[in-house]
Length: 435
Image 1 (cartoon, rainbow, N blue to C red):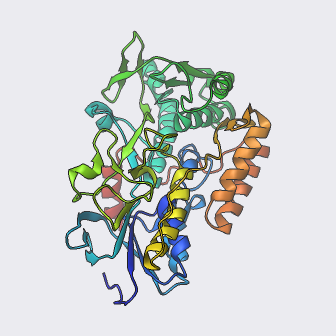
Image 2 (spheres, one colour; image 1 turned 120 degrees about the horizontal axis):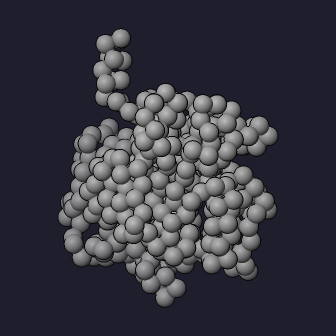
């Protein structure tokens, strides 16, 4: 790995998500050598991935180079690598680019899409956890619109213009709202051969309301917002199978579609090597104590989505969203320095700052301790918070001007099929032949 030798304690961090970035930024400047490992060379602002997939933003607006964070410190290093396993007895990790010894190990690998064992959905569906996956969805949506223009098969045209999303949590709600705005504002102008009424957006949810983690008031308001946009909501409906063309459910509902997006849940993304006792198998997350130490290990920690810290207020662990990850990252940085300096560890306590979700233009819902509200003001708060937490001034500026442009022009400027999704392998073959 070409990591410089040092007399300083070495802190190795696996994962450059919200939790990983929070601890790295706090440890820069401290008397430790910090090494951060990630399979990508950028941090992804995941809450805005849905805008990349629906042509609202380009990916470089929500991605930030990892080396821009570490470049001003000789004690903080980044390596692009995939971690294969952990050898706790030797305090060593095995990666795709070599092995590395650590004094303290922080696992911040986040979460991955949970298919609940459904192989047909995993094989044929689309999901959205990374920038490439968001670009795949964008390409698929636009390609299906292009194909709908030219097909003379009415059944195929109907399937191409049917958009089915599963899971009415924040991701599913925001995606379906954004696709509805694409239908209402872009399709009439860009695709005069398509009647917007032919385009249908179906949102399926297994529970009895949308946004189940939020208050009933916000759930009801979000439901109304979605229906105003033309989204068809199917509650108490669970998908049984998707064969690539037909969605079957536990009810009489069956939908033919060429665009099936799975947003129904996440599970932890652990690393191989630790004892089975460290893992809560059902949640696929590491069990940690109040100091984020993994059960059975003193110098191995977990933070963010991968960590399950059971407390009186959160018996099932903290919610798998950005705020707990950021707060745990900052807190653990202080505790690692407490260990290095021989001080007492401080227990972590999560401060819930509220929950929010946007449903589209001028429509959002926000839950705070003092109550819930929705509409334009909630939408404005949602925009401000997301701009604030974007890493990098350029990203904030570009995103702000994109939003401003989209707002005044009812436009989505990033509707480009740069990398075709359908027949992608054939396209790659053509590209190589041209080169």
